[in-house]
Image (cartoon, rainbow, N blue to C red; front, side, top):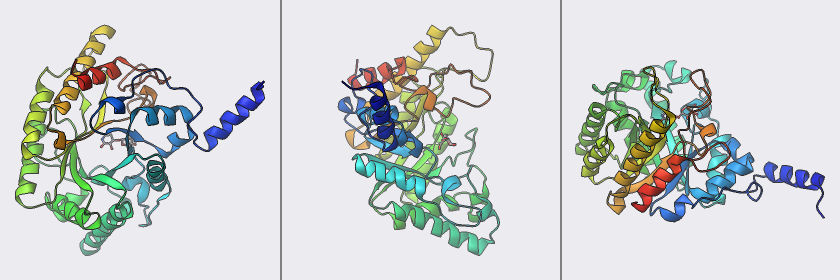
Length: 350
Ligand code: XIL
């Protein structure tokens, strides 16, 4: 007979080594067993110490994206040193568990660094190239793809953002340079331009696609289109489908790169009932999934959710969080949410 103490000790030992056999997974058809394309999830290295997360992830997904530990904020110090511990751990976890590794992000307006801000323009250019060479080069052969530039389009969709990178290298110059350097560093990774609100805001979606078009015409090695898909569940039906239809015209792989669908409304007094919100979420997420499934097979790069359980979401925590939002596929205990069923219905074509 196994006593309680030995059960406790063995589960602690399992937790310490990231073993996957503790923590049963709630009964739900594995997403990856249904989808004819990779299913991805955002991961932090700390998740690997949590058997419940590991089990749920290995049951449902075939690809990981580091949620923040491959960003400049983690890797580059103020003095220009590089830090690899967490991103290496994520890459190693992918290798050990035969998961695809998707990497984000090399250049992002919201993460300029104190180090770069201190440089004169010639040194800035050299360090820019070096950063991309070091980071993309390190995961060469393991990264299936990279978000090379993240969120280049202005918030309202009117043109491109100004940021530290554009100030020094030009508004499109920094984008072009990042793709060229990434191509040199990892010629086999699929190189993505990634952005958000592309379905939610048709003006922004159109500006983004015009940017893709210009870059391709100029011979810039953009290899894929990433749509974050932080969905606004109140957008009209058809909007998501329309964006995918437009985006597909380039023939490039498309990545749903950060799907979540908040039930919260930040902009007004919310009069919707809980049922209405779930219905909106279900309809919009099913539409997105169907629009992705309807793409030609070669263009379905991957379908990635930005966290596994509601409690893993970047939308939880912080001052605006009421502890009730349910923007992801699984609840805090790893049980499937209505949103899981919406994705399943989209995958199965119900
Ligand atoms: C967020 C992560 O979820 C957070 O953990 C991190 O602190 C900041 O970044 N768009 C993106 C993602 O491209 O990288 C962001 O991820 C969410 C919005």
